[in-house]
Length: 142
Length: 145
Image (cartoon, rainbow over all chains, first blue to last red; front, side, top):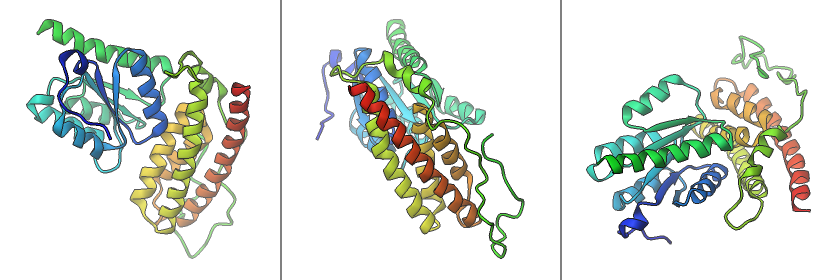
């Protein structure tokens, strides 16, 4: 079992929370995050991600699936945006829904990026790169 | 669109359909172009990422289809929607377009209101998934050779 205690700045700044109940997508995102020299922290569903976030805020970014058992991606975004210690973590929402209203809702809730499925590996790579770059830009500006 | 509504009276259980599938399967089970797009990515241990994704998909897909069948047997619309939604996502990502389309349709159908349509769709889903399994099996062997 993994522990999610406090880590040093250097370590924590490279960790990315990945919550998706689809093992194919989780593995794919994990692989790309590793390629971009970050450390993936996978969660099998929304509840597991929520439990991780309750005791751990040291993430460079979070990549969440919209439709997950127990707790949806949008619920997690709302939770993260209501907690001061999680507020600054950039979040990308991934979804198989093609609804434009959902995209609007996710940005209103506080998502940084939105990626509809299906996507090509290049699109996913670029989106993750932008998400992590966005975070770095925020840190530099701070 | 592969699937079209065939009748306005689908929930008329007194007049069961003669079970002609409302779909026409005309193309291959897998869009290999979609699958091959993953070739540029490599798993962290140097192994073939596509093979890993295929293995995960076949394992998880079988479980999702069982979950769909169970949900249909229990007329549990919520569980049906969840399982169909996840199968839709992974199938479209790996190019299993017919499985994705059938899953997308199943996601929208109420098993209580349209039990006959759901039965047909589940049967088609099993058939299409078996085709995908076969193609992925060949692709897997080719990549490991």
